[in-house]
Length: 135
Image (cartoon, rainbow, N blue to C red; front, side):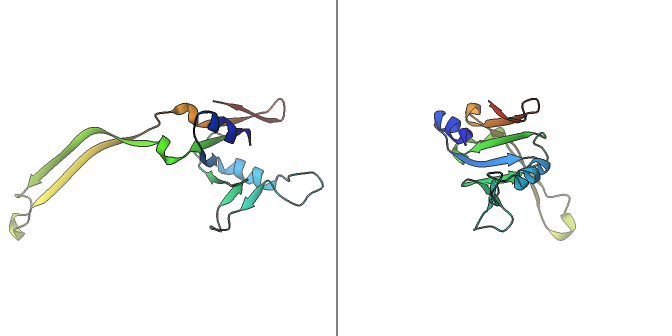
């Protein structure tokens, strides 16, 4: 759980962990201790398909590299930015037969992480056989 404390050093609280589906399946098989039946992941009582690491949800995405888990901070750390102003085009000629007007609005947006240090990246060290975390 050092990732939770590393995020706290940046003034953030982890909202979720995200892992490759293959890694999430491997994590689901890990036991907390060798002589225990308790798994590392616990079921989320609010959602049947979601698992928790401690109390932080574990999400899956094929976009995450294998052997990597990312800790994503609360939503206030990610923002939507407008890259280009909204363009509105009106065309009355296309629908002249029905006396209608076609309106098209286009904008360009992007997801921005103003504090990338708050995103915690945990990479498994294959040589050591354990997880080491990097920013």
